[in-house]
Image 1 (tube, one colour):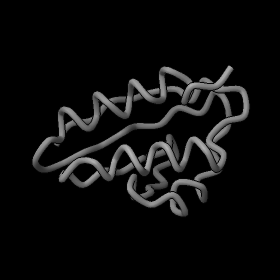
Image 2: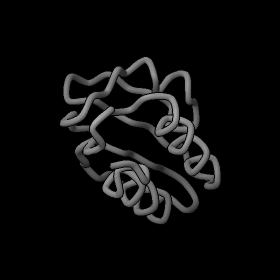
Image 3: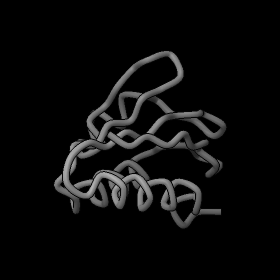
Image 4: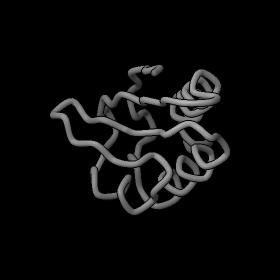
Length: 89
């Protein structure tokens, strides 16, 4: 299992487009992917709907967790997506 903590940096937070981008990217990997908030709420990283229920805003700190084949690559790619502000601002 691989984890990395990241901060949501885009101004509008984790709205529909970033959630879709994240779930699409996570779906490219065999590994199970989860997003975990500071208060312990979890969402399946491959489910746009579950990601949206987290209500992540700019400045939210989350942990990306992946387990299984390709877990290191998945976490790296997803962290880069978040750090790149999902191509926004």
